[in-house]
Image 1 (spheres, rainbow, N blue to C red):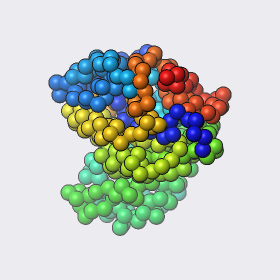
Image 2 (image 1 turned 60 degrees about the vertical axis):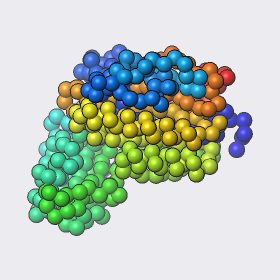
Image 3 (image 1 turned 90 degrees about the vertical axis):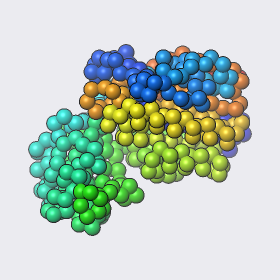
Length: 403
């Protein structure tokens, strides 16, 4: 590999749903007044995130407890707006890698799935479907798990994301049968009127509602692939690593992925990311998703839990920084908002922060807001001297290469 790259390894860590204030078009999404970081911080009387504060997080917005530190020579900070017409996981991550999604994926949060879809799913799978409403995966097992075991039915449910989830007991229905049913659901949900971003198999174990437990290792996502090539595809095609930690590979349906490491929590995700930093010698990008901000605290409208998760993450960021080399670059960002005090349980249309840290930086400062998350992928490609295809969004952050 060419040794002239400013950075040999780029780590992009997505703190899932950590938005930093409403987008200019928030009214179109019913999200005026949303601010995930500020409202989480207010719930605990101020956030204690010294490592991200030292990177300039407090310069980007008024966040209780976070000082607007302007002296951060080793870090650049800025905010990003979303060009795509959506506020979901896939749309946000795809835009980071350059994809402009102007037709949002279907969601069925308020209504459940249409009767025609459920009827067809029952006919094709041979199982009755129960549930068919928006719920957390743990709560719906308490309500319907025993019925599912008794009748060997399928628990079908959704969330604020564009997703159809099917839960079934590993010993009653069996994992392979659950996968078969999810493959049928994925086929059905390719129709435009039912098109969801992901179908997810959710196997569980246990004997009754008091001890049901989801089996994360047997979860399987059936996602859509981006319709056009992404920055990840460009990296992979040119021999660079695209190591994916967490649900990144699922979000991209494996497209552009060279290595996948699954995780079960934010802490596990940081453990495995730090392991790659310390022990995995590669040239390219490590792309990480930490989902619990969103799944455990945002959707469940738990601002205190959200704030404590941010503080726990900041400690792990400090650990990460201690192992970085001169030619490493860390980017910390988010894919949308999920304001934990907002109405409903949906994501929120917000700007996201972008913090860039490297021991090599000497002139770090606040940069102008960018109008697309695609600045991330464009910057990665620029670092590795790769031409960005015309269909991809974003301009590279030139300032970081001018030192």
